[in-house]
View 1 (cartoon, helix red, strand yellow):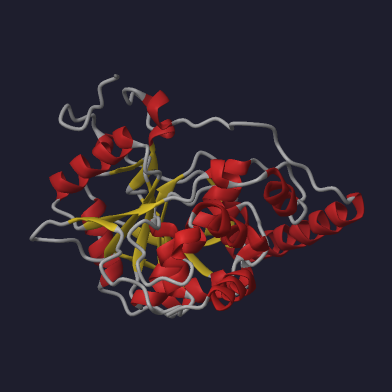
View 2 (view 1 turned 120 degrees about the vertical axis):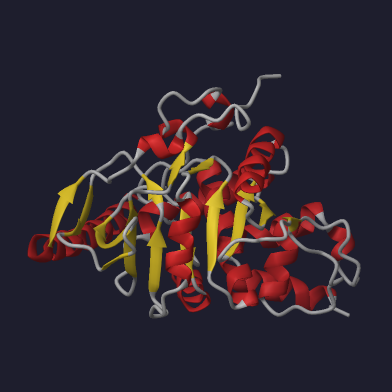
Length: 338
């Protein structure tokens, strides 16, 4: 049995900026000193299990939707429990493609206190929304699951729309024996990227090109357990997850093109896009120390400069390639309001 003090100490030591520690105390006091985790949300279960705190009920899992023919890699979809329309959308498109997947209950922004939001904002130079912190925390929990299961995993956000050739791209990635530090970005983003001038490999349909700069997007990426562990180690302090993720010096990031995934808000002509757009529930938080803010900004600019140098030497700045016809509207996937 996990002792109260042991659990509190372990969570406090391992979790970024102390958020989960206080969140557990406030919302799940029944978990302390008990092996029964039936009332505990998935995010907490994954968090505690990933840090080696045993004594958990083994039936506590992510929410799974299975198909007999399955997908080429494990698929984990980060989704808020209250987003029923998004979840129904994902269920429909996954069923249509015959893919296995699991929902990871996202960390909720409303569970953050004002103090926790400010503590996180103090570690990032730009304005921080509580939704940014929740997103950051949800991805960290996903990485913990990848580590625990020791499997390469495609992590999706719940507004990700898949192309008709999506399964082909995943099969190509699955067939490769990549280095541990290799991560694939499958998502279309509207901002230009700095990419290598020629692809590293091609399967005849999709190409994988080395990324030198990508400043936006974590809606669809494939990551392995060692890369997830390194990313977890690098993010003990809060950072805007997509801006920080793709700029690790050790990371070998590759862009899949034509991009087989696009967020609903960037898919022209998609119905009910308002269902997929979120707004902040309160104000933005700013770092309290101007000196620290400037130091953090200088550090981020140095990373940007390093990537730009790499890009000048062997890359080019250009928009990502996307075949919008492969995302043709499907009435079976259209969401109705209400």
